[in-house]
Length: 432
Image 1 (cartoon, rainbow, N blue to C red):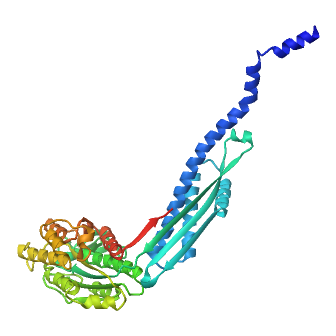
Image 2: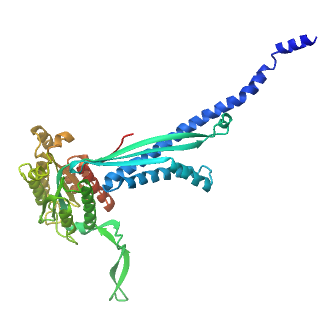
Image 3: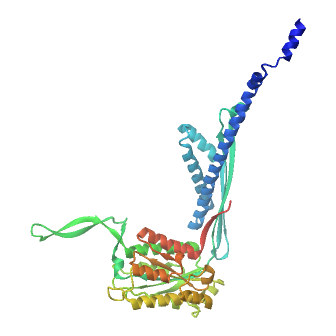
């Protein structure tokens, strides 16, 4: 009887499912927890990679932009930016201040950055910033059933930036006409307010003063913007072996020019001496003629100068800026002067081009960068200019990427800075 009872019990399978479920449930829960944590880990790794990429790219760009930044400074910049962004993301994680401080210390200990700089002949330079980092991501309670409390996530990022050794000769044609005395919308930070007199008293026989905002004039904005351009060119060519710059200003008369020289100190001084307040009408034809004569192929001066520095090739640029329209010494638009300026611009853009490219320009067709490479390229800046001024400068520019239409001091400064960087061919790229 006893033997039969045990045999029947052994053969009875009625409770197997419940028993197997009880045994497998912790494993199934743990596996499910791992799946959730793996999804979270992938998201966390992508976020960490994006933060690392942004930090190395910013550090590499800063090295190229500043030019004099040390590798130690770049490494610190990249590391600090990376950690600051990660800690910002952890602020809403529910960790206490002490726990956040501990996480930051671990993250800093597990993050390494290495910056390198390589400068070749004629100041062509390349910069690289590498970063590796590891982060211990907390796992869910379910994963702990398998004995895991954290998962290590590791990322690596490499960013590079470069300054190409682009040789160039540049000539600025700058407006110093009477309208350049007008105010912009930017308050002068060095003197935000000024006193303005007005008649007061019972019989208006007294002079009183009111305090008003002191706005920067257009001419002061131009000087500041040109200063930014010259600083960018100096960064690109600190040894003065690549870049030559000259300038001429104009109202209704063409002023004495600053001839093209190595570096920017002389032309910077020239621009800073533009008259305040400026006066006169507007006629850019003389200044543009001087620019064309200085840069044209038939004038061997620039080629000889660059040959002396072993620059076998160099680009030629005119920067043409006005805030108005061509009026001569009157207050109204002068179609004859406008047409003359257009002809000078066409001749400048055509200088050195193939016959086919010249014909395209004459017919109003846009050239490719390759087609215009051997000509004089013209950047134009219509600063708070009226429609006829904008149309003229749009025509004179070498294309959409060469025409700027700033409406305030900030965008004027940005325009001059961007032109310098484009001309000097500085850039930053992400390589990881």
